[in-house]
Image 1 (tube, one colour):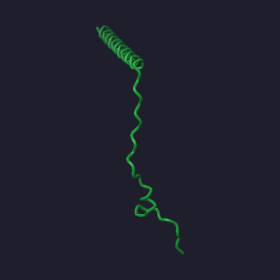
Image 2: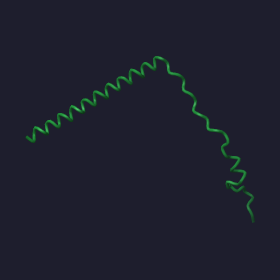
Image 3: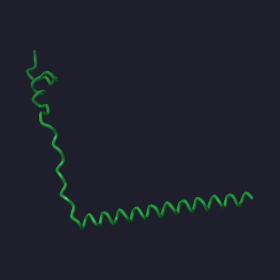
Image 4: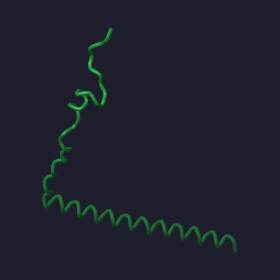
Length: 75
């Protein structure tokens, strides 16, 4: 006895009807940032850049000090 249920294969009408036919929509555009928000972001970016430079300098100074201490211990 045969079953009368639809067969889900790529050739069946059930699958081809369910295929996507539209292009995926692009995400919605973000609203423009206010000048106040832009100024704040620029200020934070500058502060972060200065902080990173300071931390790098501290790290270099520590490495140099550790290297100098190791050289003095060997003498």
